[in-house]
Image 1 (spheres, rainbow, N blue to C red):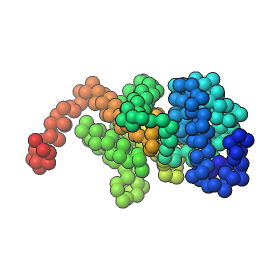
Image 2 (cartoon, rainbow, N blue to C red):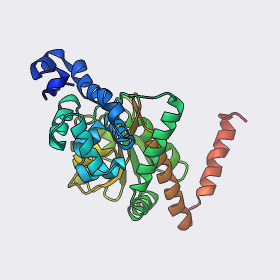
Image 3 (spheres, rainbow, N blue to C red):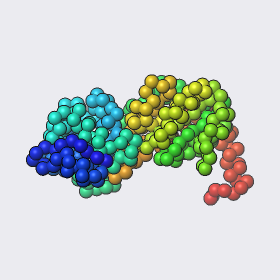
Image 4 (tube, rainbow, N blue to C red):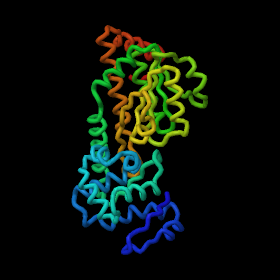
Length: 305
């Protein structure tokens, strides 16, 4: 993380000095501005500052209106905060953020004041869940879940932090219907599996946090093969698929020291419940399938009583 923006004279730092300091010191530039100004900020401005530190990717990929909607903080308040931190305007602020943060990199929030870590985490997860669920289009959600319920095959793809979320979603769906896969199989390439999917099949791609460089090419390949593509991702992933014919479900991540993926797991649970609702309404014997699965558990004595 590097920063080439000159700090104001009263902070006594120059561009050359910042360049020589390197990544760690450059990161402290933005944090230091917030720390030094924190006591003079209003309560709303403090909330905005905390949000920015934990959502640097969102700051870069969202316009002013989107950032205001995502954070729940008005545009005038954000503009006042930029000026109090020593930036002439939002453009200069984003230019500085761009130099210290790469979209998709792990968010690391440098908390300025946190006396109760437990309460702080709870509050952040509550906000993350609230914004994620409020941002969902119910009609679009119902439509994509109907597709997942009736498709010949469904696959869930996840890499890095997205893999545990993808695995969780697959484990929920496999209790409701057959032919649900998790990709890639550990240690294997994804190519051998993708050739078995045909138009009408559904592929859910979990793209939260940092993504591998072929993410965009993967989406293009799935669409070229005529597959129905659903992407569960954060703002950076949404920006990467603009213009493509995919159903995008936005997850609002929250950060304290590192990112929390609570909202991503919660959205997976919501999708599974909605798929169950679609299957039940069509007369599909979900309950019978679950009973059969439990019967297999009993045969192998896999679960504790």
